[in-house]
Image (tube, rainbow, N blue to C red; front, side):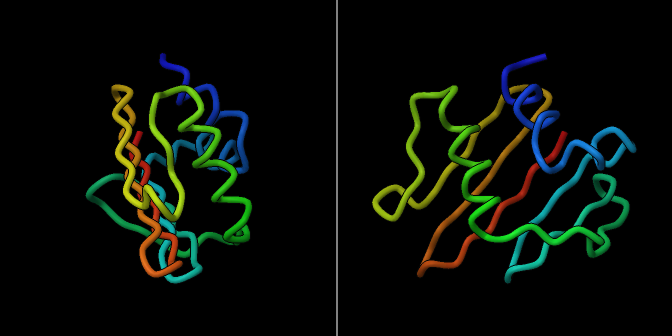
Length: 98
């Protein structure tokens, strides 16, 4: 288990990870949760953009990558975890699969 999994298990996604969810998508200000290639549903808990931005920044802290307006595209693969994020035109989009 890599450092990314530890960060995620200590994050606001902990409850959902503990329940077995393995697909998280944040788009247009809404967090969706589900099971990879099966379904996504709107999460009952809706974190703020800032909370999710902090999470992504924590995840990049264990890599040599940066994620900000100057570096708006991010891809972290820490098998079996894949994290893709983009910050284009000030819109934050994140997809995390476990």
